[in-house]
Length: 224
Figure 1 (tube, helix red, strand yellow):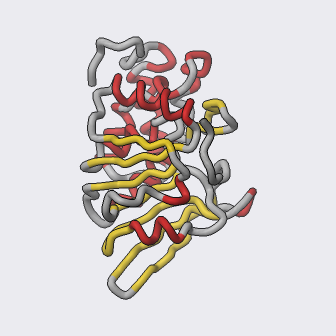
Figure 2 (figure 1 turned 90 degrees about the vertical axis):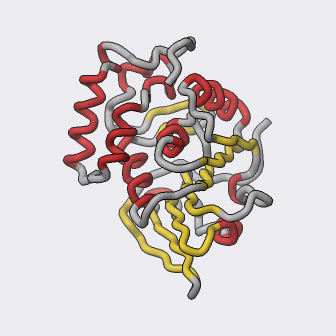
């Protein structure tokens, strides 16, 4: 990761390596077992993805506001979704619905071949682009668009991950999932959301409910 940037990538005090290690201990206690996911979570400076005023809370296992009525997912959820996505083996090309702050994007970029990430709110996308560039993550492509429609025209994806809750699994995303691919996203409304794993096989689609979650809703359209 590059250090010649306006971001304090390494951190100190509340954002130090020791603080990050304590977070990893909590993640392991909550059942995260993938060593590669844990290592990437430890190395990725979460404090870069929130406003400076919230940096001291970056390594708490909690969601944090990022503006525009959006949140940075809690570390456990980021680790859990990444672990589920990779449980069946490596992914070469992953589609992310909802770039947000760029934190989940950054974690994925270090675990898979390439990430195509869609964000409907341009101001969030612009900040995420700067952060990803500062971290030297060059295997990410960003698009300002309606995430419910996916990113057609780029072929199929080995993995798809959603960072906002859809009422149901969007059919357009199923169409973009390759045979053998996996999609992880929250589904439902309000307090009735669940993390869902969708797998695509030659025989069709399977869907498995993983655990209860709480995400902001997935909305259509774009914000300039």
